[in-house]
Image (cartoon, rainbow, N blue to C red; front, top):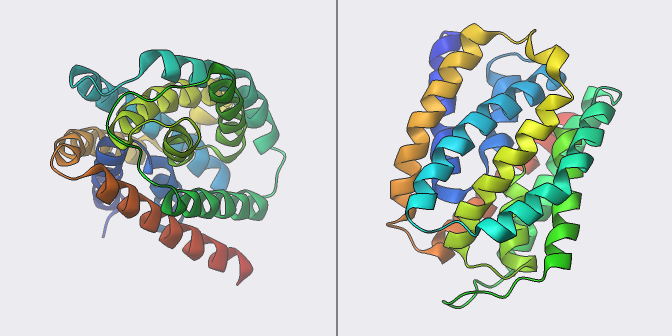
Length: 248
């Protein structure tokens, strides 16, 4: 199967995850780029940021029209992570590939377990403490910069479990956080963006954007509890695969 066809299939799956779950795009994009398309870990994390930033921005507009974006919380959360994301992006180039892959797997697994343990919040508007939003956003930004992920797979658990947002609101708000964090991390990787194989990355992005629209429609038909569990189980599976690959 050609690289372009694989990129189209992987992009569609990642867009579906981002549109429906508000995260998971990076956690799927990085393994797909490494194991299916032969990218190095550094190139894969950079390409993932490009893919997820563009796809998340597209999906964000759809969720905003549905009133599922908490703008004040999301902007505070994202702003707190901009500087840590840029510092982390500079550090990532100095880390060995195995360390990046292992760190990615551990963080993804921890986020999945937290989501499985947390209970969906009741219907209604959650009260968000600015201090907690800023602290969680700063930590997320650092992880985004180092691991080259948009952060949705951590933003959704944080928005639900730490800040008390409902799942649907967390999905829409996380897309705002992902877009800002991805662009901040990309600012420190400008040199590596030019070296990407755009014949593969371009189709990947296009398929992901189309998949995000389908994912948004899916999120309107599935309960928040079901979305949360599917998201967590998918993260656990990917984390286990990547950790086993590093060990073996």
